[in-house]
Length: 424
Image 1 (cartoon, rainbow, N blue to C red):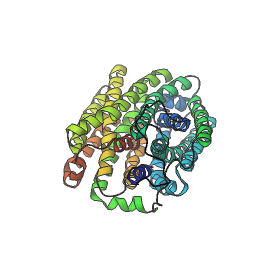
Image 2 (cartoon, rainbow, N blue to C red):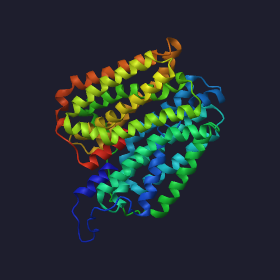
Image 3 (cartoon, one colour):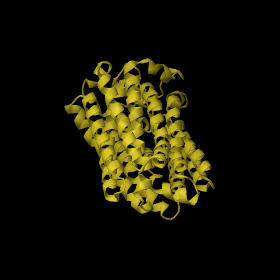
Image 4 (cartoon, rainbow, N blue to C red):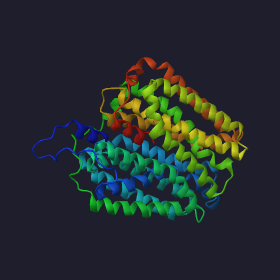
């Protein structure tokens, strides 16, 4: 977890500790680090993996568009709620066991989703997948930093590269395997995660990551008493409505086949990865975080309005999706960075509280978008999403007094990496 990384940074070396590592080549890493990095790529693939196969699932299982969109809802809802307990679990059973628990859950539920015979079962199994993803993602960064050679900077670059590769290639993998069968992406994920499980179980030593003091189960709930955390959490809730309206609804009006959707959302994922890893840190070094937030939120609202106006144009909608990805990458990272600096709470506790609320918006958006499209017009979900994002911008502007602390300056590389990871 993030707390484990902080613990490594602040605890002085004693007689029994390993000597500090010196900076070295990013490619000269123990096999355990490459095992966790490989599993991280696959875990982050899960974000956009199902996008290219949503229409195929709807056709094959005779499900409505709203029912199919619940694949996102169950995944996000459980991921968000699980974030409330990941710190508590990891601080008690250790990083390696938490990683293996997450991987095992993903293997089981991804395979079960691929074998399902009705859309309700797929929805339920995606919820289990979300539980596994929460445990894995919350622990992977600290594990790589703890096991890597060449210092923490090399480890963070490697982790960010894994994250970006996973976000970008997830839709492409979904399109490639989905063009054979809608079940292909689920089985493919299960096989790759099983390989990751075996390699981590074999190569990662349990004593690689320092254990931390047990985190109280109530900690993420009491964190919501902090005004700044609450403001940022509700900003993210309304923002995530726009995020997942763009991600989960647009595959239907685009009208493309699995490969067409795969390439479209590959472009989207690449845009998210590039701006979250490279652009967001540059912006927050030059401008206040709150200024970056409200300005980028308004740009995203304009992009969503354009998507609604161009809903019947395949080329126009693809352009809006990819441009939206550029903005989403910035917002994900800057929002999570802001949460980490908004209070004196431990970073994993603050991010757990924030994530639980923000994912509620993501969980509600896909079925709500489909229902609006059926009741009003194909473009209506995009206009509603734009309105929600404007509300998020207004929350930032009105809450600037309690957010003064988040504008203090740039963050160390580890905090930026934590924000990039948790922001996805």
